[in-house]
Amino acid sequence: MRYLYIALTEIKSKLTYRFDLGVEFFSKLIELTMTLAVWNAVFSSGITIRDYDKKSMIAYLVISSVLSFLYTFEPCFRLGKLIHSGRLSVQLIRPINLWKSGLAEQTGRKAIYFIILFIPFVIFAKLHNYFVLSIILFIVNFVMFYSLMAFISTVAFWLENTWPLRPVFSAVYSLLGGILFPLDILPEPVYRILVYNPFALVGHVTAKTLTGSNENIALYILISVFYTLIFYFLYKIFFKAGLKKYEGVGL
Amino acid sequence: MNIIEGENLSYDYVSFEKKSGFKGSLKDLFKREKITVNAVKNLNFTVEKGKIVGLLGANGAGKTTLIKLMTGILTPSSGKINCIGHTPMFREEKYLSRIGMMLGQKSQLVWDLPARDTLELLKMIYRINTSDFTERLEKLTEMLSLESKINIPVRKLSLGERIKFELICSVIHNPELLFLDEPTIGIDILSQNKIYDFLLEINRIYGTTIILTSHNTKDITALAKEVLIMKNGEFIYSGEVKELRILTDKDISYTLSTNKDINPYIGEKGKCERTGYCRYKLNVHSADELGNLNFKIVSSVQEDASDLDYILSTIYSGE
Image (cartoon, rainbow over all chains, first blue to last red):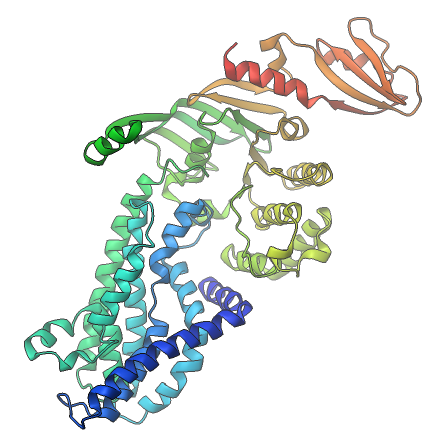
């Protein structure tokens, strides 16, 4: 219940800045328009790439772009901000689990996007046979991606600034997650390896699932759960080790 | 009954010594000189339940480290510490629910929302039942005159109002042990007095034990009867504030207000001078001399904080 309230507080904070929400939507729209323009030019000669014609490529890119609203890197920088502002001390003396409160915050932060953007896709996903599995995959992926970001965030105990990592993450997510192009247009052996990386699970795999062209959903859910556990335990180990470094900063 | 017990408590950490100049910076890139800092050294101390204790010391004396050890943020390098029957380093939920901490410069308020939202969040975090919460919130906001400010976004509040709400946040769950770091930093005298009254009241009503660190000696004279003074990670004084003067052999100064413009001091050992209408300054060697005041005409006695400033600076500098 208390973590639900943390999420609710985050929703309230997010709603305070309506203009920021609008700007975020607008910048994503520009990003998507540019990607679509590039692919529109590629398909202007009437070719098909692997199994993609112009229509299916646009559907894929719109969905993967929408997904990138939900899978963002804020949790990766949360710990760094807390450490450098000294507010980690405030969090540490509260009787709450920092990992869970971070997940609740991220859920709250993304709740509005989830409602505005995801409901039409849920309705769309209902059209195919894997509705429940698709929803489970989406939820598990959300937690898995948060776990990955939370684990990476622990480098803040050793690094002075974590923000230079942001462009690196964006590039990795866009390429390995299949945001710029579907991963299955790559050569088969490369695709077989890339499709199981955490970024592909939240990007390419989820987009394919929501368009109804994925049949191994249960397997992907299992892999995602496996990743979640790994990242969670790594977070615990690194957080504990990092906390020992958290000494010199004044209260 | 002791609420805090420290036994041979030490905390060390490894730091680096930075070489000066460009050449030094280049050398540092490849090899750094490690140094072990003994932030807290072999401390033995106790704090009694219901007391207000001032934790004093110059910058870098080890006060912050000691508070971090007591709140479980840090794990001791050696020795033991026990607070309310718990070992803080385990950060058990039960222990964390029984303590409160206010850091004057680190806000726990949600910046974009009214203070009520943060307090409602804390209600959930500390599992406070609704009737207790409503009653306590009403009482606390009334004590600090904040009733009309509770629904205003935090970012629009003045510094003093924010500090007062920070205080409410740290006591809303009625902690048995409260840690305060610079509770009056940057706020005006009127608000400072409100905060003193508030802290004395919660100490009196709920028996809250308060550990207070501040560089504002007025905080100490107004609130604490006992102090722990630290220097280089060690205690150099532990005892009552009034006994501190013995260390420096300095007179105590009091500002007296009277309801008649007549010198209220009838003793012979001290010196009492008129400083204004119905205001006198009394200099005595011992607090016992206060017994020689004519309390029929004395309306208030305020110990002079600047005296403590002098005493502390003498102690810190080791003169």
